[in-house]
Every structure is written in C-alpha cells, then in structure tokens.
Length: 81
Image (cartoon, rainbow, N blue to C red; front, side, top):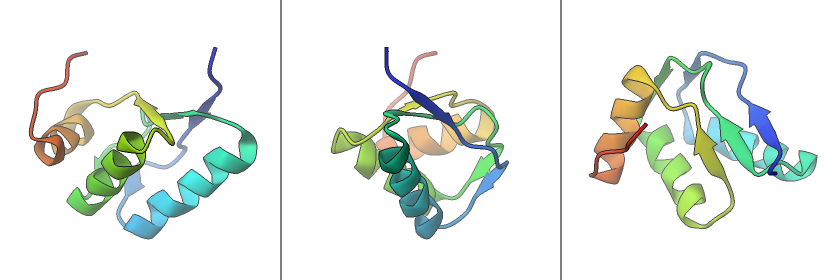
C-alpha cells in the first residue's frame, strides 16, 4: 500500500506550490498526493501536477469538482471516478 500525503490547503495557484509539495512528498516517503481538500487550482498547477504524474514521481487522488475539470482540460481527456 502506498503512503498518502493529503494537501491541507484549498487553493493551489503556482508551479512553485507544486514543486514544494513534491519535495514534501519525496521527503516524507509518500507516493500519493490527495487533493480532496483542494477547491481551486490554476491551469499551470494542473500542468505541473500532470508533469510529475507522467514522470511517475506521484500519483493523484481526490480530484473533484473544478479541480478535476481543470486537470481534465490540461490532460485533454476525461478522467473517470
């Protein structure tokens, strides 16, 4: 079972936010980033998360509402629940 790190903020607005989160994920030995508390993220944040997910550095869970829609826009595909 992979360790999960929950993001405890409701807004992610910069690529730097993501880079700091990834550093925390690596430092804590976690592999899954839970975004269930996040209510808003910018397109640049979604793009950065996709990059790190594509590099197999993280897995994402808890995508919902506007956060899920933004991630779908960046990925260019529909995600399933």
